Length: 288
Length: 288
Image 1 (cartoon, rainbow over the protein chains, first blue to last red):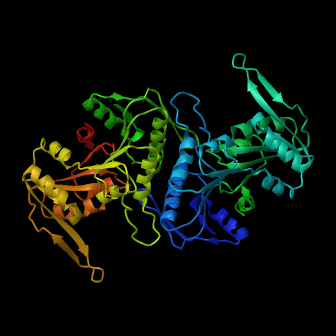
Image 2: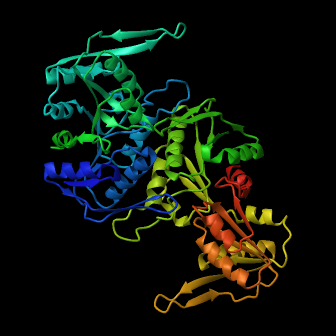
Image 3: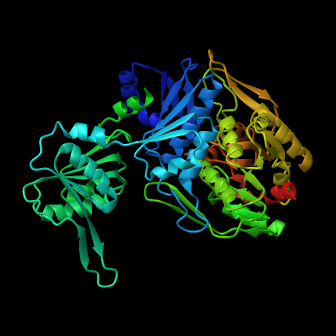
């Protein structure tokens, strides 16, 4: 088995190859002056291959490069092509909310399949049902266990695992159970007419406690910031925001820090300075 | 027949719809904060459709949007889907120059086909043989006639049509024949060892003449600038650079102007301030 690293997942690919004791293919990569990507696969790939390429930042470019890689590997004689996309872009548009809308994730998955992937693996996709549209074997992995493994080595003061909305409660529950600590959620609503704020969910005194806010994605950081503000007001000692995919769009970082977030931790589905938790063991387990 | 305008070819689509007396579909388009494209087709499209979308600037985004459009139109009940890509990106990598290289254009055309296009039309593709790899009906149109039509209305002083290299000579010949004027090419070579400059091709006195330099693409403008400098030294009165696809990367414009180019004219395969010649009649003729 040969690991083929996409440009967005070079470090993750190396970690995965090390765990699996697999070869890693050498690639030449550049961007032409007009903005087009150039890729050359230097090594022999006439074996089963695993492409690892995330699709953020620059979703469109990463996707095109993924298609180029899959098609080229097939052409160069690769046998089975497993495609690992740690963060799959365009997943939020997973249904037609309004008539005539593009169901983006269906198109993207169809392209991956039709260009020659034999198997598709992703991590914490926005909605798992999206994988039902793809005809090849497809699997969504849950990052919560590698996140819990990482947190085990940090000492917390009366930790509380908090979901920033009802949708993230299942995630907080799993993490709370593994960490053997309290968990819950709250959600802030603003009455559209009166403007009054109503908080649904737990009403807890966070005084001097460490609060771990957990979500699947941090994009603009707005949800985390709103939650952190309330937690801070309720006396929390330390606030840690933890997620699988840290997109951190524009001033997300500043917004969260200003709201009282002390630390941001994510997995390396998106590689950046916060991605301290690797999903490599998770992917390796699935590939074995 | 309904024309569906991609974001890169809105004006061209309108011109095409007018010529063909066809309906044009209304689209909602936006970019999400994370950079993903949102497209909604507002009108009924249960008919034969023609998507018109160029793939420059931002090749990767325009391609992803093209795939989203094709797949969505199919899903919304469009009958026959003809895909017009006035400028097709990734066409320069049309063969494996070195072992292991991605043959980008093959992958891109395969994606257009596999996602549901029934027919593909492009204009002045880098190499026509690239279309042999696609299994649906595919056609490359030559823009030289619409360019000649446009130039007929401009008065020139003893015009000379010049190809900036041997590869563009066929184009210069066609244009020269239609315009009933002289044509030729020259190419500048630098000896790799001695550094001596040798000019291959015509040796002509351009004194007080108008020189029309013609090429398929102007990308960095380097080729045109080098040619213009020599033409200027040889006494040309006016230098016009004309092309099908004006990509104009980075300082291309400045480079050409500094070299003595007085005017840049292109077709609207790429829409910008220089695209004064429309390819709409050319596409209309093919669709009829």
